[in-house]
Length: 214
Length: 214
Image 1: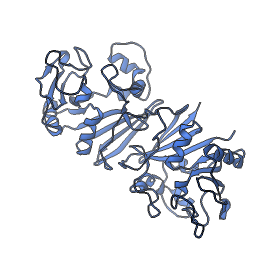
Image 2: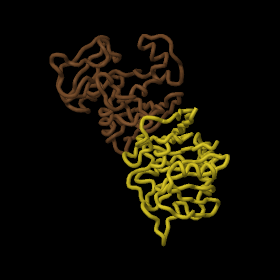
Image 3: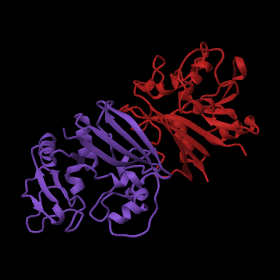
Image 4: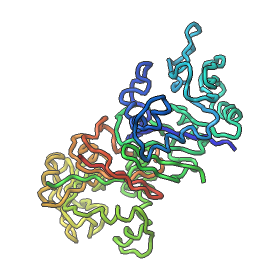
């Protein structure tokens, strides 16, 4: 059975993006600080065609980020561009250029219908207006025997967490404060719906907390 | 030089106490869940005169909780009882009975003057109305060559963190959600004032993140 896996970086004060997100600053003010632990890794740099970098406890976390993932679900805000209806003359096609790093089907939660967007390297964005369960169902079918990644952002993650639909969660807890922005657990309540801590990986600049349903 | 050390348990969503704190429920609804990892430890049980319990990665954390601590600073809400002026006929004397577990001088931040309260076992509560720096100064003098513990609650911790006066912080990150209550980092901003992650201790039901100024 295909699982839904959330892997996301969060500050000590619970934010997964900083304030004032925009096309120029998609992670919000300070949001890039949540990902610096990854940028310095040789494994991350190699994935993006760069040489050098370090090897540490986070290396397998990055190497396994897309392991056994056959499809991704993400929110409209993560796909990005702007809120509201798509611009028919100049439709936003994501942050990732002509060859996005997914290389599998991606399902985007939106209130605004749109035809699928097929890009290079095996990534097709399908826009789903029928809600989170519908998007998850489509993604699981597309993933086949593999799992589904929940890409974010905060609001999409909150909805799947509150519905108890997340099977595995890997939190990259970054020892910094953002002070404001988008909180991962806002509105989720006081219940992790059976997700239990199963492993902790300690690195110098991040702590990876892994949760699963037992 | 005496250091100010904050050791506090926090939920994944950043709360150090649940909602609706009261005399009957001093940690707020669900707040007790932040401390279950400690209650099951043999080291904790022995400190409170109980037998049995387990030994795990958290054992040295509990054993060292009061190591080298010569005084404590805490907020009025942590000392507890009720907000506002003290009741002259029946003054609140803390949660801890006639022999509190501190066994050293404790300085309570309050807006309401009161004479010191001397209890058994070496614990004297001194009530400080002149602000956080004054309380810290008194505590450091009382601690001598030892360090000062910042006992909480949230508002006292926030004030010392925002002022950059915390020298060491040990966060017991508990893999649960409280959903609402008192957040540790509310109002602290986007700055840890030089506190850096120096060690992570992973246990089954809690992750201890240790910060220090380098």
